[in-house]
Length: 95
Image (cartoon, one colour):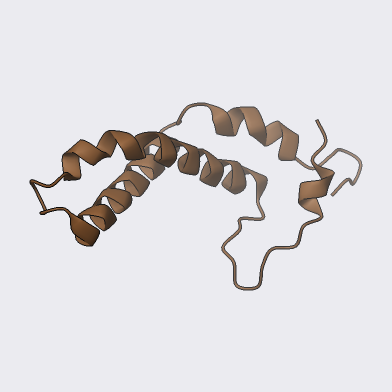
């Protein structure tokens, strides 16, 4: 599988886009896990614990993001392992 088009896209100035393929797929996996966990965390931060509103939404998003990072760091769903070979540099000097 070739992903040359993605390699040619320069990162935005000051962006935190990881250039290391392993870091990139790890960050992607954390994002996917976060999106999967976000609806599951809604009941935890409903109107009762924090009264709802912006603060509750922000706490829920931060909780889901940190939980996703921890899940991805512990092996995640296996997405990183499946995607890493596609982003690895080609043998023989490919970019």
